[in-house]
Image 1 (spheres, rainbow, N blue to C red):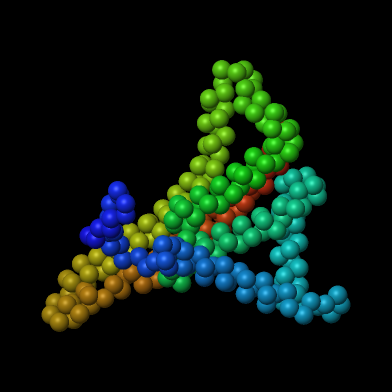
Image 2: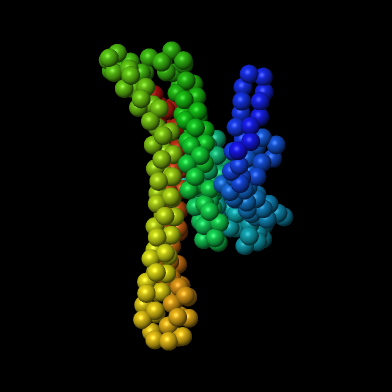
Length: 253
């Protein structure tokens, strides 16, 4: 451990193995998040090239289908076109969440398995919810809402307000992290079972086969259909849905 003395303070520099860009740590979550953003950016560029009004290509038809789906998703949950300004944000949030959840299928660690990712999303959504409430009822009305229905409930109302981003972040993070952990445990258990089973074979054949995790091939892919595909898409859907509902409800208060 190295020490650096600056004025009257002593700072300990603990080697962590994490590369730094100046004072900025370059973590695995950050790198994979950049990859996710690059995937989304490149996909958008490819899908929106050479757009035409007539005789559109299959690529343009697919892009228009995605836009129409995003429009319907927001409008059907807000009862009209009043919140159309949310469509780009919700679409970007959903796409980022889905790709982040599914990127573990190619061997990269999902950024959503890091609580800081969901916490950042939840803070942004919380700011949008709060700003919508202030626009709807003014600062006075927003502060007064904490005293409803009676003033004695003010501390509980404040806790309830702060619990919104916490619950959104922890729900998404917990489900994704649990899938990562369960997948890892299944793979490890099958590898041990494979070694124990084939180790019963006599001679060099048993010694050789016991070192190969044969049972771990294929089965984790089947479980990944739920823990990666279904759960990942469902959590992205839920997070986006909650974002829309919270903001829409805030406008009515």
